[in-house]
Amino acid sequence: MTEDPDFKGGSSKYYIAITVAIVVILGGVFFWAIQFGGFDITGASAADMQSEAAAGTTGDEKGALDSSTVSAGTSGAEGNTVSGSAGTTATSNSRSISDTGSLRKPGTDVKVSLDTIPTINAPTRIEDLEIKFSNLNTNIRVNKEALELTSLDKIDLKVHGFSGNIILNERTLSLEGKVTKLDVNGVVLSSNELEISFAGLDYESVSTIGMDLTTIELFNSKGKLESGQGKVSFEVEPKDRITLTNFLGEGVMDKKGNVTLSLDGIVKGINTVGTVDVVLQ
Image 1 (cartoon, rainbow, N blue to C red):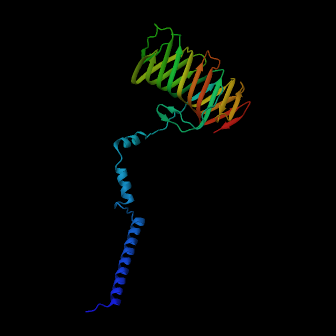
Image 2 (image 1 turned 60 degrees about the vertical axis):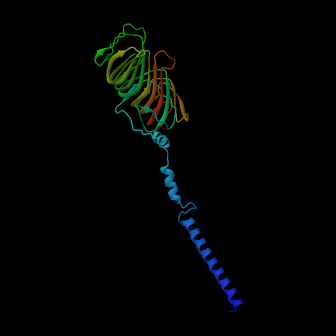
Image 3 (image 1 turned 135 degrees about the horizontal axis):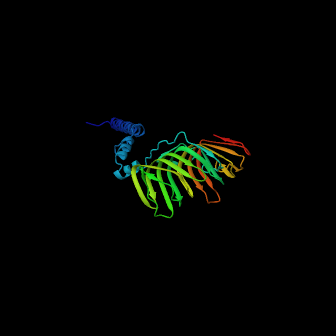
C-alpha cells in the first residue's frame, strides 16, 4: 500500500502543534504557581519558609530576645513640701530619673546652685542618702535601739531606700521612717525593713539621689537657675521666689562648701517671681 506524502506531512504538523500547546499550558501553570501560590523550585512556599525560619530560632537567640525586655512602673511621693531660702538650676531635658527602681514620666529639667540651704519639712522617698557628720551628741535609733558611735571620730552614714519624713535646715537634720539598708563607715546593716529615727543631727553635708518632693520653695538666696538644657538661665537674687513642683532628682546640701545648695533633676513645673518671672509647665 502506498503512503500518501501529504497525509504524512499533515500528521507531523498536527503532533507538533499539540506538543507546543501542552508546553505553553504547562508553562502558564508553572508561572501562575510561582507568582500567586508562593511555589518555588524546591516545592516550598514563602510562608512555609518563614514559618520554618521562625521555628528554627535557637535557644540562645530566644534568650537574647527575652533578656532585652524591660518593664517600668511609676513613682512619686505625695504631700511633700519644702520652704526656705535657695535658688535653682536646670539640666537634662526629657529624661527620667530612677526612684527606688521605678520611673517617673519625663518632665522639665532643672538645675539649681545657691548660697543658702532651704528649710524642708516633708514626707519623702529618697533612693540614696549620705550624711557626713562629726558631732556625736545626737542619738540615732535603729529598730528602736541606740546606734553606738562613741568610738568614732567622723561618721559617713549611708541610708538606702528611705521612706518617711525629713526635716532639714541650714543647721540640723532629722529623719523618721523606714529604710532597706544602712551603711555606717563601711559597716552594713541590711534587712527587709529597718526603722530609723534621729532629731537635730548637726551635719556637715547631706547628699541625695532619687529624692522625691512634691513642692520646693526657694527664696532669700543668690545663685543660678537653668532649665530646658540651658535655654532658660538667669541669676537668682535674694528677692526672687522660686517654686518647683514635683521635684525628682539629686541634691547636695553642704554647710562648708562655696555653693551651699545644688539640685539637679526633673520637675513638672517651675514658677519664679521677682527679678525674672518665669512659668514652665
